[in-house]
Image (tube, rainbow, N blue to C red; front, side, top):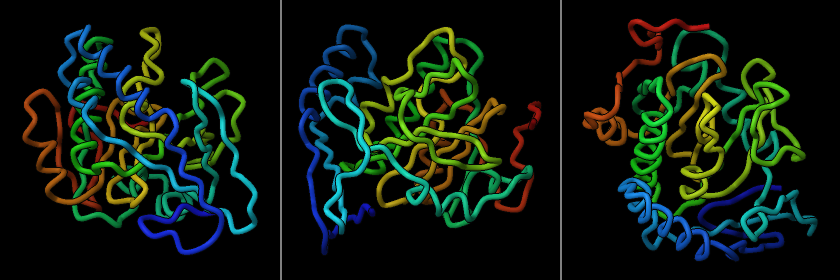
Length: 245
């Protein structure tokens, strides 16, 4: 099973579009009531299409949430990450060395600041990727970890860490897993279908790692609300004053 973007040349194709309009409108209403400018920005007309291709005609695994089905990813969908990352202190412990530029983004300590931080990160990424679907990965850090779909199959990354991988979009990245009691808000792994950038938040780190086009990294560096530091492939990516575990 593969997701091919943007051209579908063979196999059985299903466009899983049901529910995107409902999600978008509902998300925009919530953002409007709360006064969240970042959320409101995401509520614009951004229909995203999920192309599911199976040469055997067998439907992929999915789970239902918010009135629709969501495709659950497999190890094949993240093989490009697993095969090109290795434990260590460099950015390539989280991000494959395939991008033009890299950066780290500090995760704030307070819940309110983490929510604002996460919404701004999602907004900037959505500006970059347009209407492409996103893969969202939720790391299972313990028995009580919120992985959104607890009974879904896991994929394995890094040092054998289990993730639930689901194909969705920026609206879901911004509002799934909002538990104020949890340190981890939003997905731990995000990349668009065309793999033009990758955001990864490793288990014990209090920063996210980002790889992508130079213009995207510079866009993040321009945000005064974010603590962003550009890093090179071969250097220690640990932000000053922080500890890598």
